[in-house]
Image 1 (cartoon, rainbow, N blue to C red):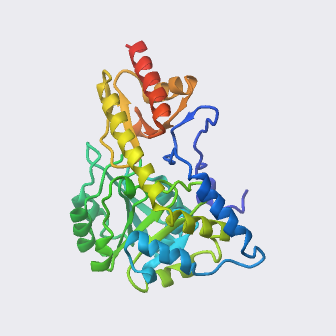
Image 2: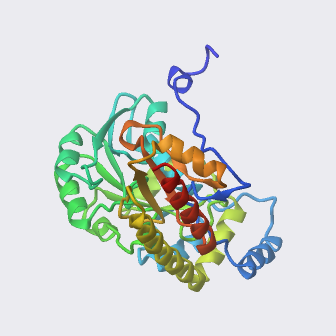
Length: 352
């Protein structure tokens, strides 16, 4: 143990309590698997390619499909083993030990974890009381930072960084603004037009949410010309295998099911929000993602989490001050959402 870095030993495990024998609404996955016909096509193509050869260093076929899907030039797109690997690549590429990055809190914990492994300082800017981004505070805290990394919609709050806010931040900070748009399909709002106008705005996206490939591990980066090539010198070579690349290609060739799934999830998100809002002393946060953050003024967050778990529903509980009494529910299939809502309503009434 003495030979392991202090920053690693001091770090908590990244673990999310599971409940695979329960209604699983805790990890912001799509509740809808990709169609069997799409899986079959992936497997058919996989059988026809050699497995004894390394995958291409630049998966041009997938990149071209991503270019069509994102309306962004193919030479400005980079692919990685999930957006988590790309977060690591960005921080490794741009920061040395002792440098600083800026993030918001509450926010996605992986940014801070990766920085901590490299002894990089992290400035955490609190969101406003209604969980909105405060661009003035972000700009102030980012003055000494190499990277400012913001998720939009933000996880776990579901709130949006508006394009004018992102543009103002990018104009007034000395470093790079990275916007993590893991959930952008659920809001149709993206800052990516700024990438063409501002050389310090880069965008991350993933196949794990709206595209239903959380188990595959695939993400991509949109960045100005020339940036991807330089950044990817710090990425592990051949980190995305042929199965991942093929799966990404075939899914992008079938946009109709993606649109149908997104429409259903957004419709269910709005329904679940309205039903939670009707419950006495339960307060949901308006969300632009595929999840909703909420709290009950009657029941402490941990107790409510445990009660729901006992009733067969697993949500996400965050043991941090700003979220102490809040839970995050991922939007599931309609019957799963009905089950969750019925259990939540009953528990809230019982705790009166």
